[in-house]
Amino acid sequence: MPEKSVFSDDWHDCLRAHYQYVVQVGDLSTEATLRAVMHETGFSEAELQELYIRATAHVDAVGADFTPDAAVVAAVAESAAVQPTAIVDVPPAAVESAVPENPAPDDQPDDQPDDQPDDQPEADAPKYDPDGPQQLALF
Image 1 (cartoon, rainbow, N blue to C red):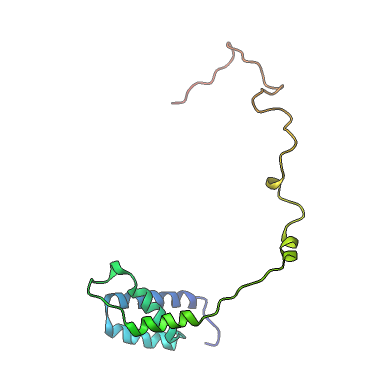
Image 2 (image 1 turned 30 degrees about the vertical axis):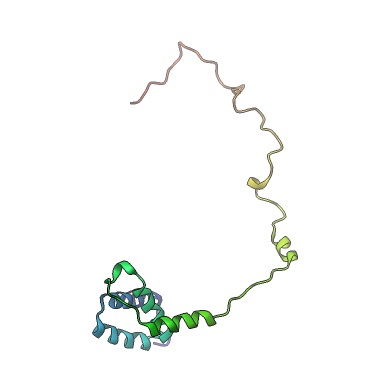
């Protein structure tokens, strides 16, 4: 199959979740075969180590005597320290040009008062007639 399946991302997410579950329950035989399948489907060793750390980082899901693998923790810490961060320097002219020329209606100040204040009845409203029809309560 030369083209990528539409479900491949979902399948990879499922493999990630299954691997984390297998690590959490400590199923070593399934972990070995699952790692082989994940390597064949394109997972790198670094990604598997990250999933292992995520699976074992939950204190409430493991026993009190659990200790994470120190080599894996050190490798993840080193790889996180080496990754560069990108800082984007945006010139002020670009920021000013990104502001829309016509602000949204909600952004415009309300300098002009409405035709009539809200607390005064409209001129077209009928006068109250006590003998006229009355609204009855429905409940």
